[in-house]
Length: 243
Image 1 (cartoon, rainbow, N blue to C red):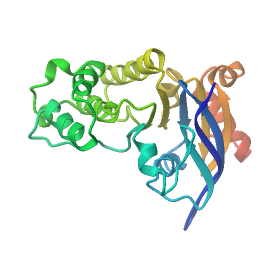
Image 2: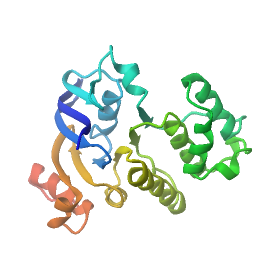
Image 3: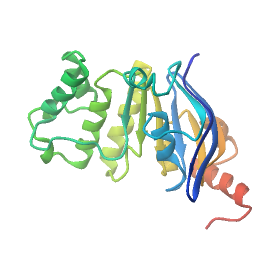
Image 4: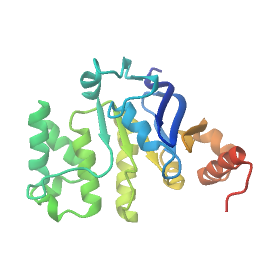
């Protein structure tokens, strides 16, 4: 099995914070959960992978190509991402928003219909985005990210702030795309319980340091949940009990 993502010695130094020597490989078709508390370095990691932040050191290979200034645009054509809150034209419908991006990216028009069906918004194609619920807006963000039919999806807190129904909808979309279309996912979240429901592999990041990288089965072999797994790794690092 080929790797969709290979990270070696990835480091980013800011005043007062260092993301230090992150290394892992993500096989094609897998869902990887990147879990850590707020400020652990999750978003910084994703932004470096997408070429939005320049690493201090280390290397990134995405779908067999180096992520650098020379290859960045070519690499990103095969990558979909949802980082922070997605942007829309609220006065336009979801379909009209997708059509703008479809034209800019030069992808087939049929992709619009396909992604609307995938995210279950095909019945809302005439509704203005300003009138969408939060869950619908998040699914529209996924639709925009999927428009180019990417092989790798990078998502930052995709269920943050959603109610139970919307959270389940987003999770089911991720699981279905990985199973049926072989899309690889890197999903960052501070919610270990949500990551547990979808991931194949899990990486624990704490205060800029990678504490562990395991399959979900290995992580749960000695721990009742990924929350307990995460807490155990942080306790081992700190040598203290977290209440």
